[in-house]
Image 1: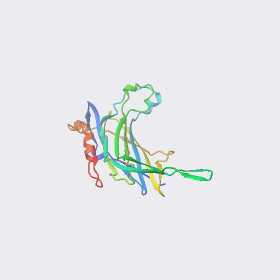
Image 2: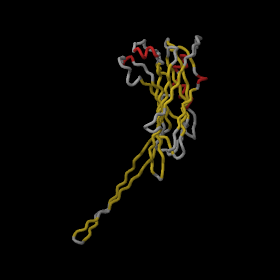
Image 3: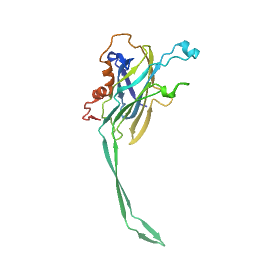
Image 4: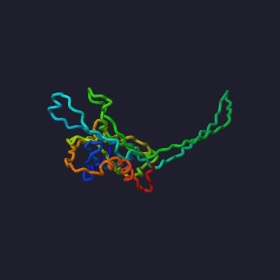
Length: 257
């Protein structure tokens, strides 16, 4: 089975630290690159980022409660939606019938009729981002106070194209608040491929259902106390700036919004 590879590259040199809504915050940039094997085309892919606290062994072993953490994904991340031009295909079907009836050795031919129908199919390339609270929420926690700690980006390829026509790298970024303590960032990737073999389309799941494509990084927030006056505006403009970063011609096609 050919392998599908998705690279999640964190651009550490572009990471910014500052304050947002009177809380310590950061902005991380990452490039998502989708490598498609020959004779296969990506159907869809999902990249999930989960932010987790690094709990001390004393707290986790004793079961004692601790103060709620400020670690949370803000509403400022991007791109939140990218779409390419819609593709349409017309499929024409014709049904013809010429009934005959045999009775007692005699054959009678009925009236011939034909029926035609035309169906229009439409599809487009789309990349969409959303944020979520933990699922399920921690035991004993108030669901109303659950913090957003997950970002999910979902890529849907155009079903009417046999080969990908859009760029294979999407530039993205996310703003989050923290408590100036190390935290975990988990990355999980799932994808589904289409492979054409002898005119038959086969669906492939990557990674296989009995395996996981998972990686964990430990993030240490900057301890610098200098105030970045431009940080809040940078964070709040992330969706627009990352949309603009992806808005350019690719193989003669333009993203449309």
